[in-house]
Each structure stands twice: as C-alpha cells, then as structure tokens.
Length: 159
Image 1 (cartoon, rainbow, N blue to C red):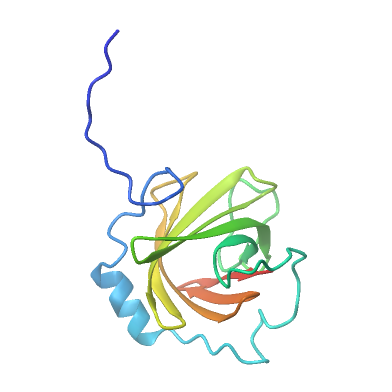
Image 2: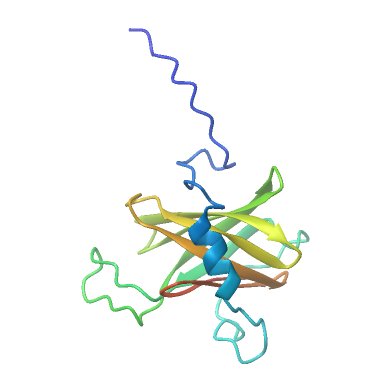
C-alpha cells in the first residue's frame, strides 16, 4: 500500500498538531488587555513545583498547572481547582512552544507564542479536544517561573 503525500508541515518542535492561527485577532485583542504582573503577590509566586531548573533559562522540563475551567473528563472537577502536570518548553523559529499535560498525563495541551522581551503572546490548543483553543499571555519572570493567563483563568509554569 502506498501512502499519499499530504504535504503537511508541522511548525512546532513536538511534532503534534499545530495551534491554529496563534497570532490571530482574538489573541491580539486579548494581549492588549491581559495583565500578568510577575510580582510577589501573584498566585504563581509561591514555589509549588519540584522540577530542577536547568542552565537554559527557558527550554527544558517544567511543571504546569491551570484553572478557570472544569474538565468534564475529570470527576468532580471545578473551575477553581488547579489541574497540574508536567510540561516542556522549546524555542524554535523565533517562537516559544509550551507542551503540557494534566490529569496524570491523560490530557495534553500546546501553546504557540511569540516572545516580546519577557512577555509571551500566543494561543493554546487542547490536543485532547482540539475544538478548544484560547488566547494566552505569559510572563517569563525568571528561569523558574512563567506566569500565564487566558480569558477564563490561569495557565502557569514553574520549576
């Protein structure tokens, strides 16, 4: 059997489905109003992860957590509950890609973001349910902390 040449080009370095239109109008409109302070009072300021920081200030393993929505596949989940998991950050082609999981690795997401100094602006796709996409804005506070938000809640990274 011969396989058809589909000419599909994957932008992200993880080889998964790409985030559709990571710089669209919804993303830019949200980026214009989203505030992530990166200060000591931020909910991501307290150390909650046990991933060791590597020499690279951005790339490598991270821990992730999000709230602001209830995952219907998790019994008893609420929007206020943090969904935590593992993450990996890679930089490619002038963009920052954050791949993460939750629900003990059963659910996966990907963020494709442009870097504007310490600020990251892009979009999230739920790789388990690709119909779910959201604008996302992050702030690289330091080599162990990325504060992030989307219209319904938070999506943070720590190590």
